[in-house]
Image 1 (tube, rainbow, N blue to C red):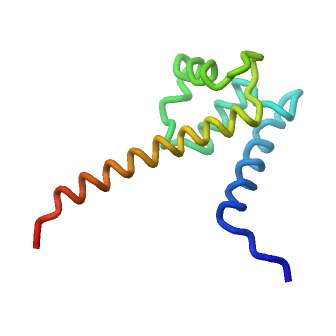
Image 2 (cartoon, one colour; image 1 turned 30 degrees about the horizontal axis):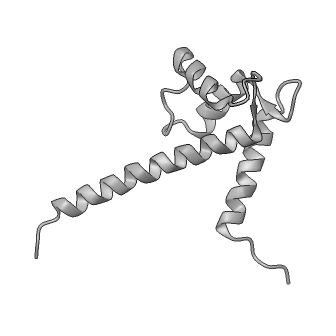
Image 3 (cartoon, rainbow, N blue to C red; image 1 turned 135 degrees about the vertical axis):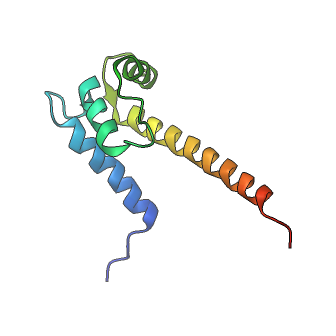
Length: 107
């Protein structure tokens, strides 16, 4: 009997699968072009990065992600973005939880 995949194993697989699904639409299936990144953000992070797909904001996000300045986003740069988004979401939800605890009436 094979061991069951953990949730984190599945997350890693989803990261790889998502990158591959969006990176394969142009000549280079190993990177994301700006257009591919825009499509990925619109389809996979529509609420989390809702303003990241307007032209000026997308240019800024792309320039920030493209660490080696080669004009495309490789898998490592993509994973860095997902990690940064996860960290910001964690921070936001932790702050919301703290505020909710402060507002609860004492018993």
